[in-house]
Image 1 (spheres, one colour):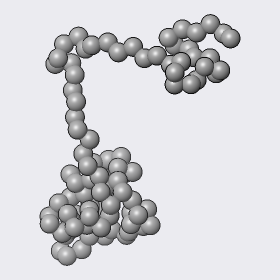
Image 2 (spheres, helix red, strand yellow):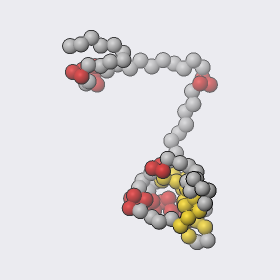
Image 3 (spheres, one colour):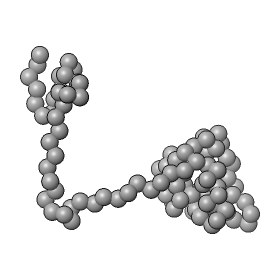
Length: 103
């Protein structure tokens, strides 16, 4: 078996019992920032929020400046690339996605 260091773990030693992790306390309390992960929801619940006036985004898009909202009784998507609103064309991925968030 090869000699190991903190940076390397031999292939034959990948079981959880052979892995050690050393945690060090932060240098000061102000250097730690813990933010709760915003809750996600499925598409039907996200649309309910839009009907209440919220803007929603999909984590898949990776851009909180791109969002869905209601305008003139229609679902619109605001695109961050050009700052314009377009009619939302809902895909299977949108319908079955569970990564929707309220902005």
